Amino acid sequence: MSDVLDRCIFVIGRQRSGTTVLRDTLASHEEIVDLGEVMHPARKVGFYKILAQEIDARPDEIDHFSWFEILSLTLERLAKNHPKSAKFVVDIKYNMATSFGIEFSRNRASSILLDKLKQHSAMVIHIIRENKIALIVSERLAIQTNQWQITDESQRVLEKIHIGISDLGIVIQNEEYQDEFFSDGLRHAEKLVSVKYEEMFDENGDMDRATMTEVAAMAGITPDFELSPKLKKQGTSLDKVVSNYAALTETIDVLCNEGMISERNRSLF
Image (cartoon, rainbow, N blue to C red; front, side):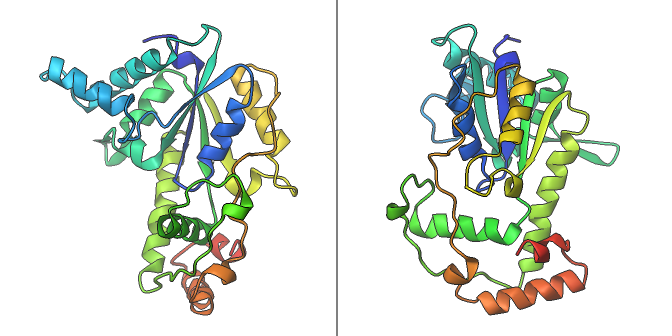
């Protein structure tokens, strides 16, 4: 495998959990280059483009266990025009990671990608957004308004959204299971920084200095980041954008009381 892997910082998390804003902050460092979402299917020069080329060239040799080789090849090609001393940040969402495949052994499911990253002692930042309601609202708003990234508050479009409550407990359980699956998959990783979205920003909305210092230590660089993010958080109160806010809060209380979802959903709501 290329030494490019040794110079990559993989940011892994659920969509709308802060992976992009953290990636942008890392890329503000003079030694770090942003390679973006290399596994996004719409990317013209990325993992899936190179995967298709490799399948055409050697169809009998490519399976999910060789995808990591393709990822490494993708990173090499994207890095070739940058200095040999550069480090790279790579954004991988949960759904992209699971597309690599899941291996089952002794009644345990594990991510092929996470296992490979651990085997190669790759640098990983795992982000979890514990407030699942805020995460769900943020995603629904982004889908409804088609605003996924905002750099100017004056551009923000706010619309009322309705959150279904009949299956809310199952939805939140599935979200929490994803976090547990990835946390378990990254356990014992040699180079890992675990971050909670809710603790990633200080009271002024800047990136938390202690978190970024920990990341810099893992990467072996000075913590010289631009801590004021260009991307704006969704800071609007939930009661301003959720049309059935009262019913939603009541449902959260019931689900917590019944033990169907974790208590932190109530405290963070």
